[in-house]
Each structure stands twice: as C-alpha cells, then as structure tokens.
Length: 287
Image 1 (tube, one colour):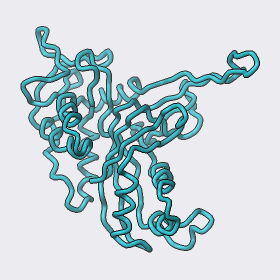
Image 2: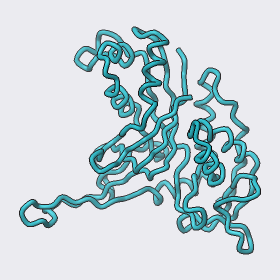
Image 3: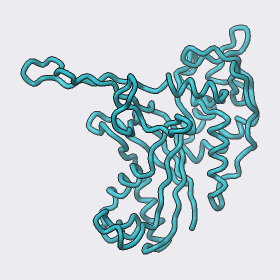
Image 4: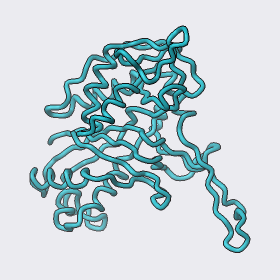
C-alpha cells in the first residue's frame, strides 16, 4: 500500500453539495460535520476520474467493477476526501489572498506523513493573534497596506501584518506542487499567501464563500416560477485543496495505476454540479 498526495486548484467556482440545506442557503457545499470545513468527498472525485478512463478493462482493474458487480473485487485506488488548504479571500490590496490557518497546515502535515517520499515540510508556523495576519518574509507583499502600521484587509477584517519566515518556507515548498511548471502562478502564490488565527478562518468559512441566487423561469411568461428561487453556495475560484490517494494493487499493476493516474490528472476536469454554466472546473496535480 502506498499513499500519494493529490492537490486540487479550482479554476471556477466549485459546488460539491450534500443535497438540500437546513439554513438560509438551500444548497450548501459539503462540509465536515465536526469542523464545518468544506471538503470534496472522495466518492465524488473517484466517480469523475473513473468516467475519464475509456478502456473498460483498465477502468475496472484500477477503480473496481460497477456497483452491480462490486462483490467481484475492490478497486486498486482509494480516494480520501479533499480538505481545504488555502481559501481565496478578497483583499483590499492585491485583489485576493490565499488564506490558511494553523489547523489546516497541521492536518496537511499529518496527512503528508503517510506519503512515502513525500515533501519535507517546514515546521508549523506560530499561532497568530486574532487581530494578526502572517505574511511571507520578503521585500514586498501584494497584500500589505503601508499606510502607517502595516495591515492586511481581508473582506471587512482589519488585521495587523507581521512577516513570518516560516510561512515563506511553506509557500516556497507548496507552490511547485500546486502549480507544477508554471512559474508565474508559483510567484503569485508566494506573494499572496497569508495565515490567520483558526477563529478568524472559521469566520471566513462562514462569510467568504460564494453564494449565488438561482432561478428557473416559466417558459411562457418568462417570469420566475413559483418556488423556483434558491440560494446556492460554492467554493470560490482559486480555492486550493489536498487529500490522500492510496494505491493498493488488487487487479491492476503499479504501472497500470500510474498510467491511469497520470492520464486523468493531465488536463482540467469538471467536479460537482452546474457543469453547463461553467462551474467546477479544476486542475489536479499528483505528488
């Protein structure tokens, strides 16, 4: 058994839901019950990747048989849930910031420990105060306002900016994995990453996700049908997530598994709902 790390970069708003919600938002995104942190369930990811393999025999060997024949054998690849790693949040300076928190990095570190020959991650950053935002230790930051005291403005949060060398090391380590072969986006990530307190991150998870009002029109009157107005939540474009992929050859060989995983992660794909309106375009990269 071998574990690998899979990164997801959302190229458009991403809605992977759990059905009807119980609050103001009719169709919320999938979240962990205990933490409220958004996820992409492994079952959703596996279903999409499975559909991209045209060779029926190879598809069955790698992902397992169809549900009707599930008793025959297990698949050779198991997909864990993708967990949020960096949330894009509107910034007064620099357009937006990739925001993370100590808890998100700690859990990513725990998952990376399962990966054979995985990344050598820096030490965990210190815990910032609730009114503080850590930014990379570099000559210039796209996010910092230098009007008197250095500050970062995220949505309506006014945070004191403090340079942190450890965060700069995290950005330098992860940028090539999230944006392989793209120096422009790697540099952009290094300039716009920031770290906030877990409580601040919790607030952003409740307020900084995209909420869209959707309607369905009556074909004759071209007005909204009765009861056909609903609110839908989505992770914003530029969201970055990560999760484990466990390779355990059952019917497929290691070479066949490697070939399939490279094939399905080469080009952008569509995850979640609303494919016809451009939602859910994602780029995957496998460590």
